[in-house]
Image 1 (cartoon, helix red, strand yellow):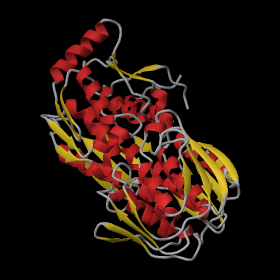
Image 2 (image 1 turned 60 degrees about the vertical axis):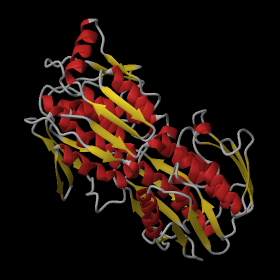
Image 3 (image 1 turned 180 degrees about the vertical axis):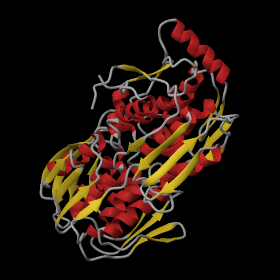
Image 4 (image 1 turned 45 degrees about the vertical axis):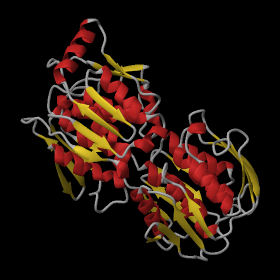
Length: 466
């Protein structure tokens, strides 16, 4: 992976995009599969796994808990020695950085242990992310969880004594990861397990968890109106083949699915599944792009995305609640659409890596776009002429329009796609990304891959590799 500067100018495409893209493994699936593999009754090898900051945090935390975890980044494989529901270590200190999946999943895992003292903390921003619903539910199941700092937030100290099965309430409106965490450790509980949800939850991620649990030998989650009922299971997680293949990341795919809108042309995305076939709800973003005007075709090897560029892509009103990680991709390219675009269902993203709603509004306003920000929505009125005027002025002054990423990988990747548009008509970079290395959280070689597409399209060297 090529080292990146503090501020990275984006090279526009002067020719239509073409070529093939190999996507990283899904972060959501990799981190779930790591936990389930550790709970299996034997060794498991994950193939096609993601290697990034978030998954390394999960793997290292499992090692600190006493599990044997061996990684081979070249082969994209992770070996985990399952211990049949036991946590080998009796004491451990875990640092989860800003990895929300690792934070919630490891909290539930440690609370479900029969014994041990476990301390979990993260970076300052992680101490602001929602944990209270999960903590309250685990305490109702018998967990001894202490909050040395602010109640309901990291850091946590868990004095494990196992969990009892019972009916318990859960408020997972701020993060479906809390529900997924409880479901995955449910087979470790003593007795029948039932959850009653307070408010709505993003079901696609819960369905992903349920399907993965089934793949690892457990019954699927049973939904009954506003309740999630876990059928009692007395058996361990088990994977007969000992190998599990991770799907390519559908959220990472959103950037390259959208790229032809900024550049025209067509790309092949290997391994990406149709939204109706894969585990990831974020694959539904492909349907959003089709409404805008991008042509997407399913092929035996994956998906093809293309845009002729002869018409202005269409505006859209879209509820992103069930696949909100992709809303930034649409918002960043909204200046290229033919009218106001309204994005709803995104209030919960204010408590993710950063306040994504406010951050997106700020950056689009800097680009001269009309933005109406409400608690749960953004309405973006494109002004391509003003964007071009500001870009030309920045380039004439010897710079570019700089995008603040707020240490959030999705800002970097989303706006990089906008920067691929040849706004000034002469190939000069007009947009730059601050702290591009933040992509390491989920897609460490994003700019190498983007540059590879640029190189294929222009029959020239990769602009992001020295």
